[in-house]
Amino acid sequence: MFTGVVGSEGSEGTPVGRRVVLGMLALGAAGVALGARAERALQRVIDPLRRRDPTGLSDLVPIGSFRYYSVTASVPRLGAADYRLRVHGLVDRPRTLTLADLAQLRQTSLVRDFQCVTGWRVDNVPWSGVLLRDLLADVGMRPTARALTFRSFDGSYTESLTLDQATRPDVLVALRMLNGPVSHDHGGPVRLYVAPMYGYKSIKWLGEIEVVDRVSPGYWEVRGYDVDGWVGRSNGRDDDPV
Amino acid sequence: MIPSEQLPAEDTPAEGSRLATVRRFGRVTRLVHWATAATMFCCLGTGAVLLLPPLAELVGRRQLVESIHLYAGLALPVPMLVAAAAGSYRRDLRSLNRFTVTDGTWLRANLRLGTWRRAQAGAETGAASRIGKFNAGQKLYAAFIAGAILVMLGTGTLMRWGAGLPGGLPLAWRTGATFVHDLLTYGLAFGVAGHLWMAARDPVARVGIITGTVPAWWATREHPAWKASPRPPDRR
Image (cartoon, rainbow over all chains, first blue to last red; front, side, top):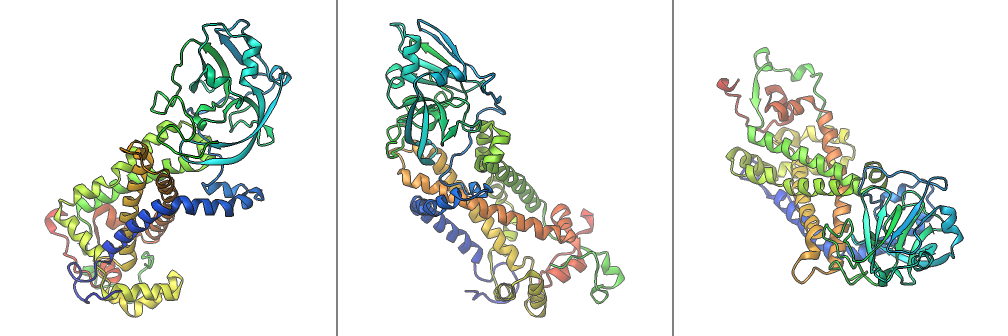
């Protein structure tokens, strides 16, 4: 491998440096081509380990688990005492609901994947809470209602759905996920779960639902994401449907 | 490299030459080193926040962190490209690129002997006396960093703009790019940590990359076959 001539440095010797750089580029290209398959294989190894890992160290392997995204510096921690969900706008009976109010409405459970637009996906997540359409029926919609605007109590994040999307049977105001109350890091105590759409539609730390007459694009949507974030049919991606 | 606070008596040259200095790095090379170091630090820091959930929870502000990471990443190769116009920098690149027989011997001694301490002892018997301006470890590290920067740039570009390419890039490629980017992050973190560890052990090497000059006795001991030019008196 090192067949260079002994002598003064500089012009003599083998250009191993260049070969290392080119080799890394080739490996990188191979990784881009085959990495998706490698990642899936790794995930099969890591997932069982992660389930039995009390230290949380395996979460440092950035594969097949939830990643924490927040657009603000810090989010208030709200619980049963101080959490409120305000539902207002083009409705007959505006309401401000506590956690207890939400728990009294009919609860629906789903087991569906969570697919992020940045590529990661968590399979078979148990969700439960109030179907958004049950909540909307409870407050009563005016005839001019066409869309919903969601606001997070983090103070910045907003989302949107059309009325047709919001009344699907797989759109949930989630109180529980992963067999427990929705934790703060996952957007608790209450978040939205829009099963057929990418994760940015499932607004975390849900604080307000306003019924409006037209869609106003949400936080990431004014920054380039598709307003209709169907998994596999938007944002230039072709993921399997959830 | 041996920590050089305490010189063995037999290595101490004559009194006059003890104070002599030689020029190790030109201004351009040092500027490139520190600009790249600062940008790399920025990339690794913001990258850690994007990648590690506990840090992400601590910092939040994802969009800001993402933008800093993106622009720092795009800036990373710029100092090296600009400096390629300077002859002194190109000469340094050439000596980093070229591997001689000595480098092969040095590497084999290191790998075979395992620990760095024993490698040092082994290398001193033979190849050490023929080490030029850079030893084989330094050459490999430089090539690794150059290659890693290019791979990170390529995969990062696919991750950021892959969806918008005409015709759309296959999703598997973008997942693959994310995979390579994440994996190489750990490689780079370990590489840079090793680089800092080596630097922490040799104060004179640190003086060299900060001021550009090193004592002649150090150059003779660490890089015996390097034909350094004595520091010109007018630049003192």
